[in-house]
Image (cartoon, rainbow, N blue to C red; front, side, top):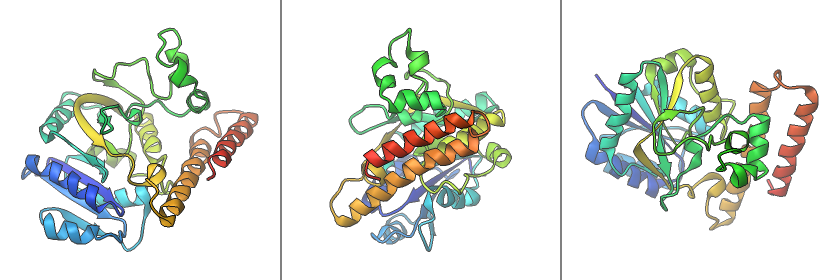
Amino acid sequence: MITLSIVILNFNTRDVLRRLLLSLTPGLQKQWEIIVVDNHSSDGSQDMVERDFTWVKLIRNRENRGFSAGNNIGLKKALGSYILLLNSDTEIPTTESLHSLLQTFEHNERVGMISPRVVFPSGQIDMACHRGFPSPWNALMYFGGLEKVFGTIPLLNRICGGYHQTWKSMYTKHDIDACTGAAMLVRSTAIDEVGLFDERFFMYGEDLDWCLRFKKAGWEIMYDPSCTVVHHKNVSGIRKEITSHEDIRVKKRAHAHFFDTMIQFYEKHYLSTYPTWLKHIVYFGIRSIKYMKGA
């Protein structure tokens, strides 16, 4: 019986993918499996995995299916009781720490998803692993910069810090609304109930959508800092370093997906909750930021 399936989605990140697979090798056990879903990379990623990591199950997509569809392919193949989704630009310094996350599942059968403590190489925490849902108010506080200014002030953090739930300690285990798709551990039986990622979200927003669906189904989502994942968040998408004209094109396309996803998320989850006049304000704000960012 396979306890843990680790699903890694890759697109043209051969070198960091190698680093991630090497970081997983010391803790590899017979009851674990690792699945790499490659979204039609052109940088030799597929050959590298086949040649150097023969114990990895490699799935070669014939096109770039996006984050949701790509991960769904891996989720359908996963046999583990628990499934860890990892971006290819992450690494786990100590794989033994994954056992503590699995114990959290065993101690509470209503926990459907767990976020480890996700940090950048500098040691600074990636707050995407510790989020509230992007309601219009939370989004206004975050994108308006008010969360950064007032989110850590005790009397104001519950008002201004809702997007990242800044009133909660980053050093203790507790319930959160949502985590990041870069590193999330999920109970397989919860996926059977909630379903897979919504493939209408090509890139960005799919993790928030999934977490909200888990919450609506009655599953708990926990933040557990006993396991740390390092996120090298500068090798793809919006944060990709610019070294060529192709990188510029990829970055602009990623920016466009990011802001279009905001509207998509609002239409799916909030359109029937808030008045029509607020919808127009939200859409105007999103499109204005998108324009200012040159997306």
